[in-house]
Image 1 (cartoon, rainbow, N blue to C red):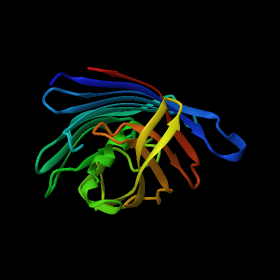
Image 2 (cartoon, rainbow, N blue to C red):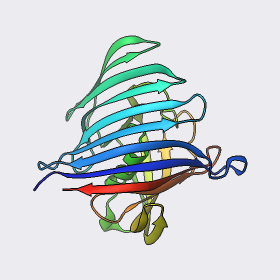
Image 3 (cartoon, rainbow, N blue to C red):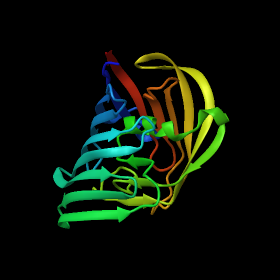
Image 4 (cartoon, rainbow, N blue to C red):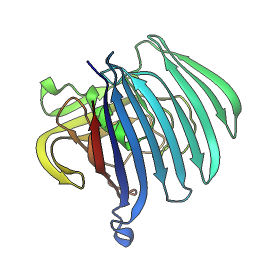
Length: 239
């Protein structure tokens, strides 16, 4: 098989009444499925809300979305927050990082099971996260352990670090056809059922991805205090 690349653009908007549909950020991404089955996600993310955030993420993962290695570079409030390199094995996760507050550090944690997912905070990555859900069991809620975050902050505006989540629940609601800026798609609808271990409870979060093996994020929305919307505006496929 040849490499397959998806390239696109996601627009971030607000759903707060005083800012309804106002653009608040953007994300440019590529997802390449290599001939060996490895998936490489490359995402440039910008959040305009103060303090503004610029995040560049490269993450290599297996077909089931479990991480292999990657890097995160983070700017917050127009100042470099930090940059880090990650590597994962069957019984360890490690990070080399330079952060404005802590300087140069090395971190390694021992794990009993391979890490299932590294949440590095690109919105397109939230689509790939749904690969964890076993569709053969139908709709409902499934819970997952052995997940790590590059930041426990809801905007991913701290770190990079190795933050272990106790568990995460994902709910599958079924398939439906949706119309978005990028076109009409058959989609799978998921939502975040729980995220145990965060310092602050995550608001309700709904995600729609393509109903195929790509799990390309089509749109997503966060309720609560955030009231944000994310939508795929442009997409191109290359094989």
